[in-house]
Length: 142
Image 1 (tube, one colour):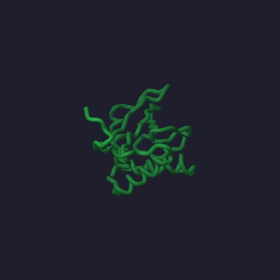
Image 2 (image 1 turned 60 degrees about the vertical axis):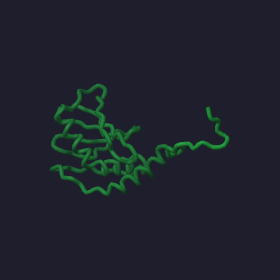
Image 3 (image 1 turned 90 degrees about the vertical axis):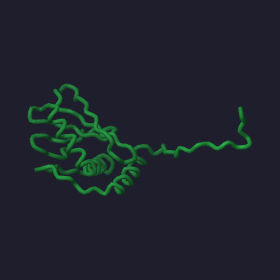
Image 4 (image 1 turned 180 degrees about the vertical axis):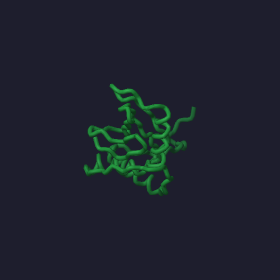
C-alpha cells in the first residue's frame, strides 16, 4: 500500500487494488483506519465522504476533520499522485507535511486535467449539454 503523505501521526495511503471514486486510506497512531472518498463534479472537489475500513476502528472525529482539511488543501496533488500510481503505473513518494499551508492551485488547469482523466475512467460516456427542445413542424400539439 503506497503511502503518499504523513501529517502529525496520520498516514495517508492508496490501496494497491484501487477502484473509483478516487480516495485515500488514513491510519492513525493507534492503527485506526478510515477511507475518504472524493466526490468530484466537473473536476472540482465538492464533498468528502468518510467510510469505515472493515475490521478496524475509525479514526477520531477530530482527526477526520484534520484529514478533510488536508484533502481540501492538497486535493490537486493527491489526484496527481492517484493518476501517477493507478493510471501511469509509476511510483509515488511519501511526503511529510509539517504544517498545513494553502497551496496555490490553478483551478482551470485542474478542471481541464480532471475532464481529460474522466475520459480514461469513462471512455464511452460523454456528457451531453442539456438543451430545451424547440417545437418543430413535425411535433404534435396537444
